[in-house]
Length: 340
Image (cartoon, rainbow, N blue to C red; front, side, top):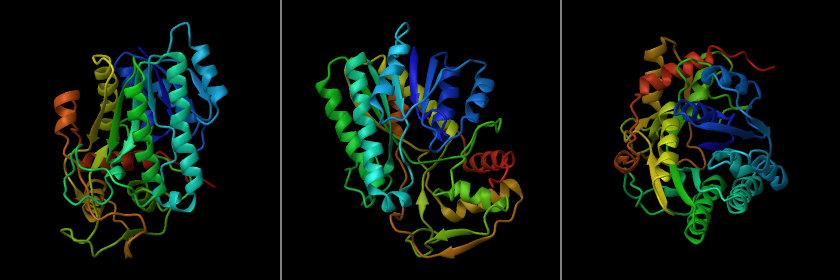
């Protein structure tokens, strides 16, 4: 089938494009290039051996969105995998309105397209932030969702609520809501990977940029958490495993008749920040310059996933370990030139 990937030149989106193509589907990419680069398209075409239609379009521009569906109408778009959203937790605390406008209005505009162009399958990029600071870990899909301490987290929770209700009220539409934990690593070819604009808000690019000399030191936020070494615990998942889950989800939707469901996407293992640092040093042989720092606003202490549902329903399981995550991230970093 033909699938529109919004944010398809971004970090997770680009890896998903590769896996969707590998599974034999056709892809159309939409991206506004606000946190990505047009050069990624060439890398994707090299990796897939396909010419991929690309639209430089903002998800807030409904007329431009509609043009994509109209231009592709000879062989209509049947599925949407929606990544195009603002994603930095710290930035969302500074720019709440931007996050609400982009992340929530973007979903509303795509629901309009689903209705107007009768698109049956929708996969949404959600987040484990919808669980807030859970009382019990690990979390399952039935762990209560809660209001987040950040606009980013709340934008994902509100989007989930809207898509759930929209799907139930719209015959012929099926939706999978995928709650990611912490995607890291890069494609094994090192042709695509994570390249945030400006100062990274995520751990792994900060580690690799520090190791490469782009940053003076890595700050490890919080050393007094109730964890085995005092640093925060997250469920880090290799981006290629995560990308494959999107293919499984959209293919599973084709076997459903009007459904909405939720899936945790993680490894089921929690690693501390220091364990990630140690894995990086072990796999690369590079000594990392890091310093302990106070806790950061918006960070929770620990979270990791129970992933049984994705395994049983989607037939998907993460298979790449932490060392593969850190080593692939470094291999990617070494292909990059420091921005001016």
